[in-house]
Length: 591
Image 1 (cartoon, rainbow, N blue to C red):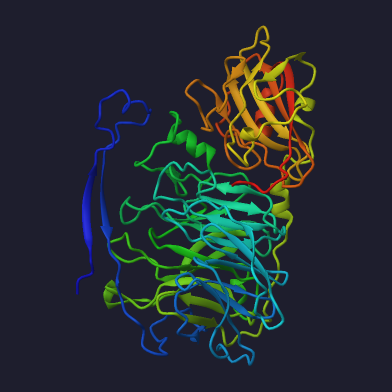
Image 2 (image 1 turned 90 degrees about the vertical axis):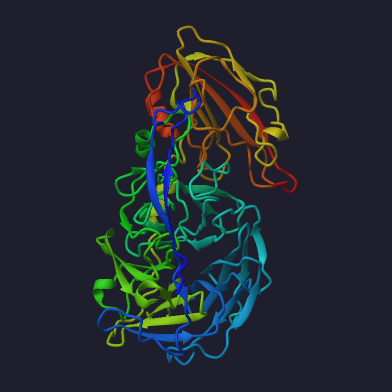
């Protein structure tokens, strides 16, 4: 048997060059030889009806709920027990039922929707939400489980690249959470919405970046007791058999999670890539959140499901399960299993195998590739094998507990996303300084902001200038919209350590610029200027471009938020002023 094993010792001379450009970063002169491997066990279909090779803890049982399902991917279970599954290859959504409660699907699946690239699926309040590569659709669930015609609510998710498999779920705060993977293994993304989890309103009219630095977090969910969001992220490839481990993260609003520059519980440095603008890896680690737990590298985590309670033993209450589709970049296979994430008092303590047995012939063959995972209406666990079209059922026959389909509490999400909302404008919080006159070549005070400055169009930062202040060491720009629904005011631009009393049109959206300017996080979750983007049909919003003169340079982390910036400014403001422009979008946006 040829396992298609390719082992290569790639001597990566990452900084042999001696040019000024090659030596520009403080962490140049790395040299590292990395043994890498490409190996996928040979696919072998399991015997008809056979589950004997699949191993679960004592007392649990594995059976086949449905077969011949094709490329079955993500799963969602409705409150009445109906099961919806996406099939990416077929481009559809299927419905399965077990009306007689015998642990098997009743008849053949029913196709209820068709969309190319269908992948993420969620059920909420008698509606089904479906994600493709670039779109999110919603349809009403009818009495027979079929759907009304789908409506497009989001049509401009980022292009996919290496990771096209969008997933989504409705959070306890009644908002859509959408996972958007990176376009690459490790790179600086040009679109800030890549390698993130997005947060959008249920009608799709508004969205922000909830968390970033997440290479590909397909599986995520909310702890049923704490309401905290957790997810399993895919690690970077080509760092060897045991690196990068798959990451379990406690995902919080506005946080970064290291990718592509640092990773893991110890925030190790990725030797292939260096942070931008001479930011050291140590600083990037300080800007980022470390993983809570790691698991075997290249195991490929897929859908995650929390177990709120039911017939499983009490020890499993509040734990999570994750399907691991299996490795291709490792000399010995990893993944091809379901793992249990053991939680204690709302905190993850360990990750351990729960269902194994898809690897055969001493690691040379595989009999399945786990993908979708969900808790069924009867409290059993459903697992989809997207290679063989089988939906497995993991049950605990001795269990007598009633299934718990509890909704996680919303407090954690609302607290996190509500920070910095309902506060005065920055200029009203830092009063008493000498006045500054702020002008722009793009618009005058109180006038409409031209379309090129809007995020609906070019998204170009306006050229600004202001009267200099004697004794000023640096200047700060804070742009806010107090007319936004939430957060209120919405932060559109943070820039500090500006040496001259002006900024050019189209200032770069990099986190740190060559002239020393540092930029922070907007309410969108991106860095740099984010132009006006009020909902279509809203009355004109007012955008306050506030300029502050300081008697010092600020030493805060790049990418800091507004409240961190304001705290650093206190006691150093010696001048202030603002320019107010308006913007309304009356017609359908161009992008």
